[in-house]
Image 1 (cartoon, helix red, strand yellow):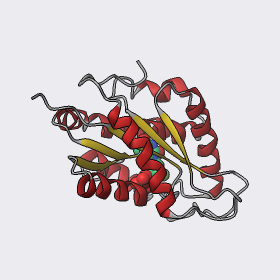
Image 2: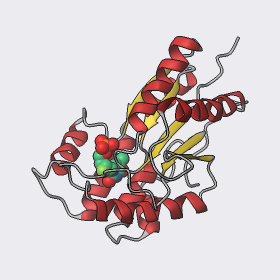
Image 3: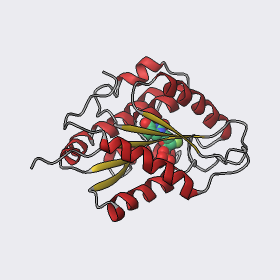
Image 4: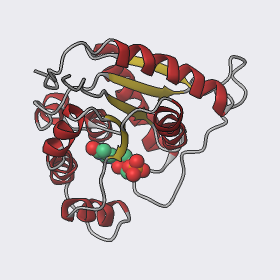
Length: 218
Ligand code: FDM
């Protein structure tokens, strides 16, 4: 019997909002409890030569202008596309931390044009599901600060604005995951967020009926 392809599931949102924790929990659930073939990836993939340039840039060891670093982030996705397609067709579900949406939102926050930002990623594999981690803006219980470039409150707030724009104009399958509780006071507990995600993922995987993979933004 032909293998059914896996799903391409993207975790998107600001820094330090819980994407990595949740993607690991999902991976454990899909592999250990559901017995599915599954792999986790993240962008930037710092293990490649391009990824190591990006890593040095993020750690402020080297500089690039805004267009160049954007192209490097995009190239870092393009260098994975063949492996990703192969894995999906072998039946692996790919859980991916960040994708082209981060590329666009972070670069737009520096003032570059959306059309140019998107153009570099046109034709990448189109996700089956984008889990958009967000918070209610009034909530103050998240810290975005860290040592890397971009990890400041003011920059993250700009990025958030552009993420919201992308979210409202995207034709892809986005699901909002609000990480703040309904009283707007604290983070929701990990289990309740994970249960919500599992429902979205189950519906997404059940809905994959053909092995065809669409192209992003085409
Ligand atoms: N980032 C990530 C970008 O600016 N563009 C991109 O295309 C991607 C994938 O890199 F601040 C930013 C987002 C984040 C930083 O990401 C490193 P991780 O997830 O913290 O490694």
